[in-house]
Length: 149
Image 1 (cartoon, rainbow, N blue to C red):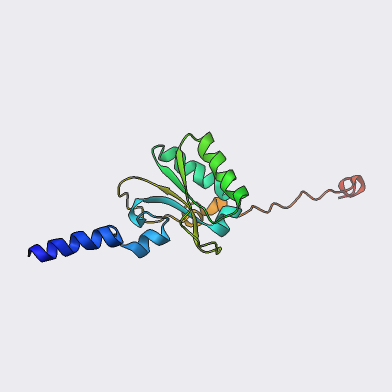
Image 2 (cartoon, rainbow, N blue to C red):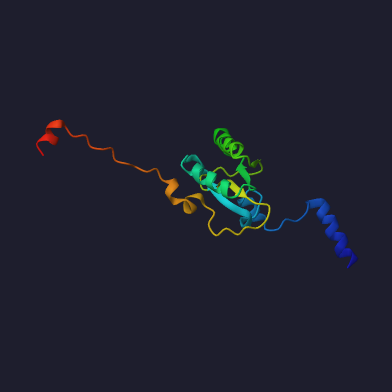
């Protein structure tokens, strides 16, 4: 039994402390899925209409923390850092993430404890904000058409 404890101690010193669910932590920018309030993949981050969903969620959860993927462009990072500063919440740029494909997670609004939100994707949580509303311009009619109608 003493050898097992000694081996664990040596392995911990050599390889670091073992992580719980390392694949999940890698996908969710170093945290767990159960701690997430809202997520945006990189493609959703480029759509400025989704910013309103993030702001709504920040206002509902003012003690949340924003995690930003460090592999995205600096302009995109700065846009969300500005939102975090305006809404007065802490943010962290996670730089050990190298996934920069559009479908990978680019932003997470998280808590320091489990919240178990059933839906965290911004476009599923706020479907009316993600799409640009196409409104038809009013048809202008001539004065002759209005007079003789």
